[in-house]
Length: 161
Image 1: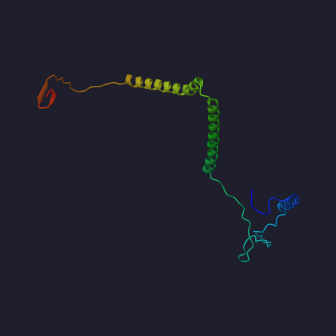
Image 2: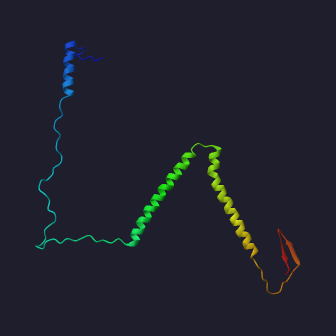
């Protein structure tokens, strides 16, 4: 409630105030202020220097073969990356509900790759061991004497001096 002496209004005053407010709300907007200017004079096409007329210069640029190759390769890499991203998105959308089947489906390829790498490593290791040949040259000396001295805190053993 306001303590303004104009309020409360009578019915005729209220309708007159409502009509005034409606007229004020729907009053047309003033014309916008122009903040830009376009010069009507056409700009010259080229600056005139001297009296020689312009000569047409056709565009005959040649792209080096390596540059064209790089461009094509980059387009291919980009398309491949988009394809891999879409495939990963689809794959992860299918696995978004975590279930035992989903977890096994994700880990099975890694387990298979690990088993394959282990098998290949074992085969390479066995192949290297089988081809080892030891050739000894010279005399073999076998020493069996052991000398032991124990003094103070530490003990020291020497074989065949």
